[in-house]
Structure formats: structure tokens, C-alpha cells
Image 1 (cartoon, helix red, strand yellow):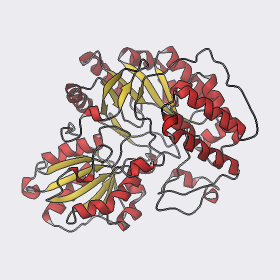
Image 2 (cartoon, one colour):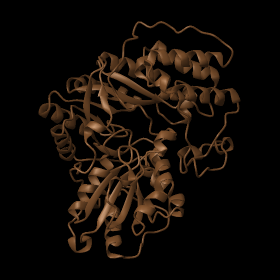
Image 3 (spheres, one colour):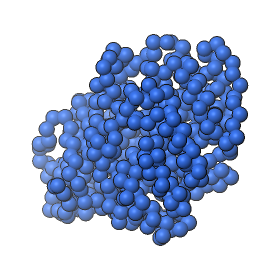
Image 4 (cartoon, helix red, strand yellow):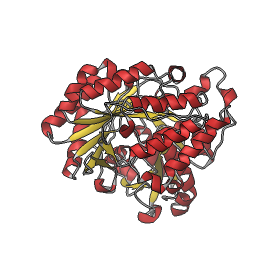
Length: 478
């Protein structure tokens, strides 16, 4: 298989500067800025990293910038980037524009129409450096129309994080007793073996995944520990796409930093298939695992191609509880197939399984997003449920055939978004959601008791969701 390696080329780079911009990355210090920054510096470029979730557009010097590369790793980031684009152009009118990340190829036509010259996906590093070299030399853009997506393995560099805001400014680990820890962020892989229909990874990677070498991951964590990290959050779409790779990393991590704790995202299917690893994960410092459960309705799970059932979800809850690892499931609570009764069944399952404290209230308001290129568009009859593509929303709007479902989703979103609600304990917010949901079909039901219901679990301080609509505050960050 073809491999690519960056090489220093100062004759091409000169003193030219590249600005890498992350509009939003779930409160994480972005690997997708820090790692290409190291490669670009190795190639002789001056690099400035700008994280719009923590910095303002005018907080850096834009002079002598030849290329601005926007990392569009999720829907929220893409919406923010498009809002910020006119201001970016005004600050560096002579610079070329490039976009990379999962949501770049999915929105290639729109991005090019907005003046983005190059759109990159997959293993983007060689094309990003080529774009910087062409910009530095004033060479014409020779990339084809649409997006360039590559899968050839690249030789990663240890991320250059010095140019980003301090870890203390990013999401923190909140412990059940209210204590907090500084969090470091690492990616051990990119892409995913699986093809869940609603997932933004699938249109780009098509069932592929690429491992970041263990020595790179460990060196990246080592430098973050030196900067104060006490916990590491792995940002992989699925940490167990490569179970041997994951186990090698966490064993070495625990041996070098025995007090360091960590969390990761793992599919329900993989939690069951690799259940034997869970006790060792706990021994090596795993505090909690996030998993995209999405629904408890087997028909919806099948339509989303999640490759697990509600019974599997309940089995995963039991396995993690037995391993003493907290479970943080995420949901797409509202879909075109959701019924009021089905939504109440989701709340009932969360309460019955003792997960009320495990789920951020925003998770109970998430509405299915359908971006351009989504595998959902291949479902028979699905397009009939959608309205035309909306360039402002970057997706296909849909309205439920039962208007009460849409009304409930909006009411819950308004409830959860209130500052006074956000200050309440999760259990109190859940009780309010429960009441509103059961009132929608005209019923009343008491919350079920559960012997497993416990207190708060370890969690990150920023509970946003990668496939949610951005808030007005997020859109105003720049």
C-alpha cells in the first residue's frame, strides 16, 4: 500500500505562513490542528493554529498568510465556519482557502461555491502540504472539481500543541464528588470499520479505518501530561476498531502514567464482542465509555444500521456495570420514525436501567440530521420524508408526520437550553422531560424506581454532541 511521508522543503515554503482553523471540536484541544501543524512545520512553513471555540478571529496575526485551512470535522464546525468565512476573507484577502475533515467532502459543492479552493478528506495530510506549497509558490490550483479523498497510509508526526490554548481552557473532567481534572485529548485512529447509515464517517471512509501508531499516541499524551493533563479523552469514532492496537496503547499508558485516567467511545456491538477486555480497561484507568446507543426501538436501530438491538444495549449496560466502568450512552432521540410512545419508551429504558445520571439532558432533544451524502439517502422511500436541501442548515429538513412529535422536540429543546435548567442536577431535568413527554400523548406516568440508580458519574464538562445544531452562542464565537 502506498505510504506518504512529509519532507522539509524550505525552498518552496520560504517564510510563508499557513493558518489552521478549528471552528469547534467538542471542547477538545484539536488533534486535527496539532498533527498537521507538526507536518507543515517540518515542511518549512510557519504555522498558526486558531481554535474558534476558545479564541477570536482577531487574536492572531494574519499577515503573510498564504493558505487558510479550515478543519470541518463535524456539522457544528461546518456551520460556524461558513458563518465566519466573510470575516476570514476580510482578514487575509490574499490567502487561499482550503477545507478538510469529514464534513468537507460532504459539502464540497457548497464550499467551492463559497470560495474554498481545495476540499480534502480521508488521510488529508499530503494534499494539505501540497496545497500550502502551491499557495506559497503562486502556482495554480490543479485539484479536480469536488473533493480529493485519499486512503493511503500517512506517516504521522507527534502533534505540535504549543500553538494552541492551554489544556486548562478546554473541557475538564468532572468527578462525582464535584472535583475536576485537566483533560488531554488523543486520537488513536481515524475512520471506522462500520457503516451506520446516519454517521458522517461513512460517506468519507466507506468502512475503512486508519490507526495512528502507538508511539505517536503515547508521545502526544506524554507531552500533554507534562502540560498538566490528569485524564485523557480518546477521540476515535470507535476505540475498538482495532482492539489489539487499543489494548497496546492503554497498557503502555498505564505503565508509564499509573495515576492517569481515560475515557473512549466504543460501539455497543464492540462492548459485547470484546467484553473480556473491559476489566483490564478498568485496571488501566478507564473511568467511562461513551457509546452511540441511538435508540431502544429495534426497527429504528435497523434503519440506522447500528448492528445492535435494544437487548444488546441492555447487555452492554450490564457488562460495563460489572466492570465498574461508567456508561455514557448517546441518542438520536427524534427521527422521522419516532412516535410519542416510542420516545416515552426511551425515557423508561433510561430510568429502568439506572442511567438517568449518565445522560446529559441535551441527548434527549437530539434530532436526526441528514447531511448531503448521508447513507440514509439510499434507504428506499426515505427521500420522500425530506424537504429540499437547505444550504443554511447544511442538511435536508424533515417534519414528522405527527406534528405532536416535532412540537415535543422543540419544547424539550427550549427547556434544556434555558440557563436555569442547565444549572439543575440531571435527575431534576430528566423528571421535567419525563413529565412533558408523557403529557404529549395525554398521559401521566410516575418515574419507575430502580435499584441501580446511583449518583453522578465522571463526565466531561462540555456535553455537546457532534451531530447537533449549533447554538446561537456557538455561532457568535468568532
